[in-house]
Image: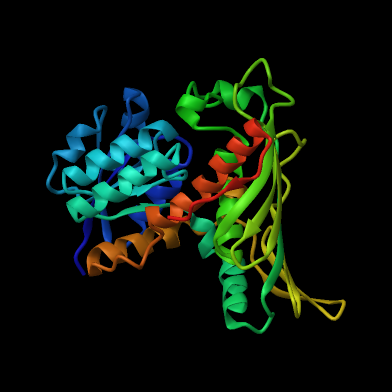
Length: 341
């Protein structure tokens, strides 16, 4: 099998997950890592036995590099991805795909114009709990979805924002708890329940007003195209990172995803359908365990020219539309209609 030449841009904490997936893949060969911090790039390259650069344009000019991973600050995702496809590279972007819907739409256009793929790492769609829930919902055996609830109660303090100068500001992070911590949950909610048509929500900053300008708490009531209603709450003001909870109420039964368990609730009886093993201790537990699967799907799509085999920007933009809707609703106090791409 042909090996894809890969470079990873950005050597922050999440990069280890991408690097391990590349090194462990039979479909890819790691060529280089890039980081504007010279020492961080050099140390990462030494650990993974590859080349390193400070300027990402070096790998864009390298014909041996076919795929680039973007593990950079949020505000760099769109411009780097667009530059990447213009130079003939396929691009896999860490979430969020961009900091706003407008930038994501530009990415979609540029990928089509240049005949290249841009994928987004919504790896939690590949979790066994998520896949089983999706299978059951699509089978029809639970009946139509009537309601869905998503809860994210985590903690982020001063030290978290002090580690990176781009976090905590709308211009560089794109938002707070919504776009950084809770975006995976919003993605799963719309993946399970379908397209969102309208919502009403609020955002606020309750703990770190003197540290960040973005929100640390958000909530919304969400209306779906199929008539289902969603309830969403997220905060970085708790004292620990509790397991994410998603509850899906259907006409014949309900599903509950909490952490690594999927539970079926029917006739007042609970059955555990999926109970995963503990998360890989090398990584933070809330990253999940499915980055490697998501990355492998993207590589396979590149090798087979299968545009439907990975999570595209067209999919990634849906959670951004919800997030922008919550911001607009919070500032206006009105219900916001969501335009589906």
